[in-house]
Length: 586
Image (cartoon, rainbow, N blue to C red; front, top):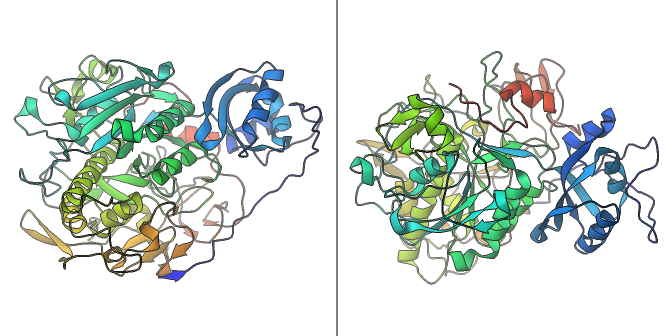
């Protein structure tokens, strides 16, 4: 491993007038101070929109009290305080945004965007056989998973394994488990359902894992970013008391700003620094609804969080064999807007998966075609794939704890193990999908368990921590399948045995992809289609900076400051900012 100078990024610095004795929120007439605003807020300011908008304002480490005083002086109510990221959620006038941008202690102002669940309505297969897991495989016993979603409906599939439940659509009150929409219960079943109502046919990946529920989405599958941040902060602060090892985020919103200023991304990074493995959905924006062609850069926030495990979706076609698997067309491809990072990190079965139904929920009631028997339903999407990977993480943690109970396996090491043991996915022509489509490959829990059980995390930094040799392949359905045997670190690819050593990369407080790197930068090739903002066209030219703009036939990744506009995303899902999820067949 060699040291790497941090990749240079363009920084726009605004030198505003500092008035310490009397701070005003209103800017000087005619000014257009948008350097601290995300894309949506910048657009509102440029258009001269009026009205009130919900925002998340991040400050310097000592700026929170000063911002609070400035907002109170203008009679602006503070809805939430996000202490871990020095931020508040509030409502302000669009005409006040420029003035807020001028305050020296304000670092960024972000839209309190609507986050949505990421599922569709089409059909496929059973789960554990596809993953190569037998009845004797690990079960996730003793591992705690925080489900931040639409809720969780109690029942025989989960039994005593549901711990505390908090409703962050109502200020985080502790209450009995519920799920008005039904998405969270379905994801929870994929993670940890024990298949009690189906004779174990529809058993989750980690059927003995514990669940802690956090409701952040309403009966229509939508909610505010600030509520998700509040739930992530709470889970992080109380991880020891609640026994939380993993956070599942099967939701997201369009990326509107760089990761370093995105408040949801920063909350996720804080959780990872606290030792929690965070698994996030890539999004279901991999195909143009107009042309039907694949497109890139559809990753959602917080899937752009560097240290999160971001997951795309695979179709397994109701077979256990991996040879017929395909990356689902709707699965969002990378790279991430603004930062140009390689995402997703992995893909996993996510298409047509049967799992537990919340039988009084909106999804179950309004979509009879999705029902399976009387207690289950079938859904597709990166939400489902994310649940599968969260379950796989639970198996990995259980296997390592049983082998080495005194030293933990930290989040970056878990991510590296999952990538290294992943199984490459081939398209219908027998050609491997590119890294921006499948990440390192499809999750391989059986291989990840085998590797994790041989990693002695008590070994000194820089030494080999593998206690015995492993064969870099897994047998599934009678086939010998080679592992990817690579790790994608930021925008570079390591094809050596990096996870066999206790590297600095796997320690605490290292942001994935930063400071250190090994291997070569990834060359994406010319098979990547692109287009008009997201133009669905021919190819792109890869650069080392911010996401750029298209000339109609190709895209240069250069110094452009703007990401996808609101209209771009509206053309993709038709419902940006609406309080519903549209079920479509990809």
